[in-house]
Amino acid sequence: MIVSKKHISRLSKYRKALFRFSELGFVKVFSDTLGEAVGVTASQVRKDFSLFGIHGHKRGGYQIDTLIDKLQNILGKDFEQKVIIVGIGNIGNALIKYKAFENEGIKIVAGFDIDPAKVNRKGTVPIFPLKEIHDYVKKHNITIGIIAVPDIVAQEVFDVMLSAGIKGILNFAPIRYKGAENVFINNVNFQVELENVIYFVNMFKHEKD
Amino acid sequence: MIVSKKHISRLSKYRKALFRFSELGFVKVFSDTLGEAVGVTASQVRKDFSLFGIHGHKRGGYQIDTLIDKLQNILGKDFEQKVIIVGIGNIGNALIKYKAFENEGIKIVAGFDIDPAKVNRKGTVPIFPLKEIHDYVKKHNITIGIIAVPDIVAQEVFDVMLSAGIKGILNFAPIRYKGAENVFINNVNFQVELENVIYFVNMFKHEKD
Image 1 (cartoon, each protein chain N blue to C red):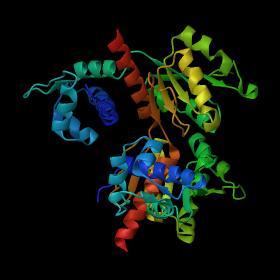
Image 2: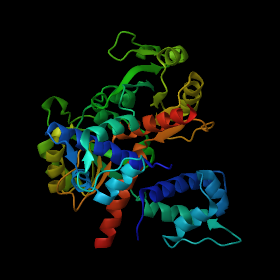
Image 3: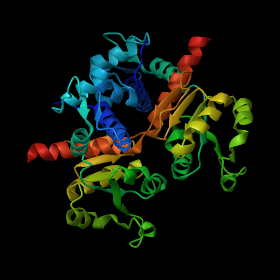
């Protein structure tokens, strides 16, 4: 089964909409109502769910509780997801303070940095020296990590994280990693994202000229 | 012509690779060499360029200088791109300090915030009260902005930016904007990006079980 990032992003939106419907007292929902709530067609909703073996009833729609349970499981929301972060610079700090993670059952449990000045074992999110990452990851059974270090040290940090047992990485360093066969990497590149905006605005301007 | 984000992202990578080739003293490059440098096939390279009317010669390849000039123009790199940012919190500050932008000819020229404590007219990147955004954007002819405010005020900030003349937005607030017909919005949602990593790691774990 091939599942794209866009598909998961939609599942995440359905989940949020379903919680809202449930809070409003609804028990069942039709694909067209759910589709409207997240900005997609009813047939897209049915297609997305059928991929995971979830089918609605033509007359009754989908049972909201059942749908929420299945989505919680698919999206890994049925237990708290513990995440570590390496690199406590500007972006690292911003992510540690990013409140929306906790609302979604994601918790950054620890940070790591090579700079001794950044180490703070007593913080709300404790910051440890990078060399302690192996022990921490093993002890707490962590599989997800964030890389927010400068690109010149990113490959080194990546190797350390993999050897510690990390299986999935949200990566903010603009480099291509070597030895990335057995790890899932999701890149966020601010520069590329901003370049996209600039590109489309310039295109639009030229079209009007 | 429909141009996707992925396409632009590839053009941006070609551009960087071409600068490296040029620095190494190369004058011409073949599509297979360029493809290898950025991790795509030779036919993908040719397809990407032909969309913009750029064609190589079967025997001689592409002229690097010409290619760089065209890409600079397409990607809006032929002059400095001035960008403003609204919301000088953790993410806003991280973006202002993000060095990779300037390397790519992008400059965050000013920040805006409703909090008077954040205002700093004398900083390297000056921070102004939000109400001054209209004058600033008009005076400096800015069309690109970044939204890095909490979601509860994001729609309001969005409306102000549009009325000031902003045409393209890199958005970090996790909301869907109303009245977004005439503006290009590119959303970066850390939570969704991290959820993607979690999802794929969980899938892989289940497969192995």
